[in-house]
Image (cartoon, rainbow, N blue to C red; front, side):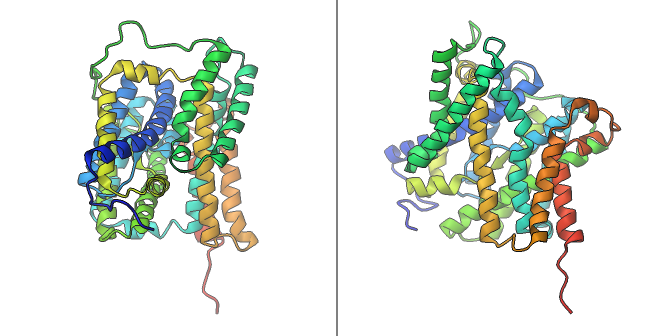
Length: 425
């Protein structure tokens, strides 16, 4: 495949701005959606949280371009860490922040030491397919809560009906649109979905009067506490999945562009991701990861220059410095966020299915069980009622009630112990 600009080419200013805006249109929705969900879990003001998240995303993106993998890869919040946060809410946010910090330190250390080759052996194509799909399945309860959330003014039935129709329209648009319009569909869905919601149900809450146009969040550093063993283990398993996601994203773009020194790029890129998660733990936001959707954007725009992401990184930083801008973006209705999250998670499931097909991961009934059992088991655990979850010991609760962790552990046991392929003879 031929590109108008290579990895290290610098487009002229006008083209650079256009390409940068296209990358920004891809970056903002994911950061906004996951940020809104986590800010809602934290229960405090959403604007300062989103400001810190946008600033962290901008810093990690620019660090990757110049110091990390040096590839055209978009960065955003790691959905897999959202699962860890959801399962550990009872332990407190101080413990969650410390767990993300420790996970980031270990990830950066392992990558910097070149030890990824040993971890990669655990994650066969079948296990990776489970990882990709399980993230979507175990987020189903959160998505459902968002879709039926009418903010107290809209009945849950009406909100759900809106979400159902909106979801159908979104996937029809995905099938019809091509090129950059399809690549930025999540952004248009947020804009048009919010407008449709306002027309049907009335105005959404806007930023409080007197919200500053320019101001940094007051408390950049977050409180920390020594994590419980169960919480820490749950997060470390999530970080294993994050590492594979990061590795796959870097490798996919590197392979598409036939980049040189990929081993070095991978180690440096994952190291920067780990350090970004350390910074996330210190500031109290969800950690970052390189997104796997980048190859589609490169193919759609024909631009493979890493410098095309610089304007996007600068724009994210400027947004982070404006509470008013963040406040308007944070006013998106819950059903709109839920539907767009469905759209993103369906793409995640599709990626898992494609990986399974391309690697011939499911050729026998037993290989199908290695994928099917963890998916169903993880989904069931994700929907456990609170009355059941609180019955487990506090130390084990973050592990047993975390559908993602249970599913990944089941996949690893089935793949490497129960149905391990032994040499014949």
